[in-house]
Image 1 (tube, rainbow, N blue to C red):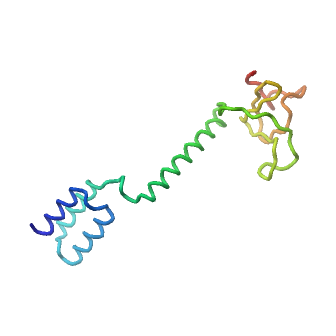
Image 2 (spheres, rainbow, N blue to C red):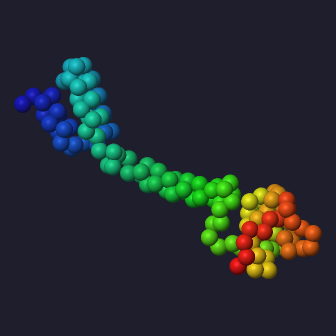
Length: 148
């Protein structure tokens, strides 16, 4: 059995990772132990038979972690864009006077929901610091969406 036939069998049996196979075939081609036609055929066979599950396991872990993070972001976006409750609605907090992103609490963005006096309200504006239960406060600032 010559080198080409041996490599063909080993590649078909998935004895190499894709990166090992590419390195090995390149080396054999450079040493002129494979013809260009044999090289191309073996490369095609390696591509068809590669086992994606075993290629670059560290990247696979990163891709899975990024996928989970993206799902979390999509869920949060659905809550904001579609105004779907995300489970537990937090109690309304009075604004503490600090800016949003620098320790500011009690600042609500459009679509966020809060509980106040057993009612659930949805903010109709960004950077909302008004108390939804105050007399005179209503749409478009806060909209009552449910009672507990």
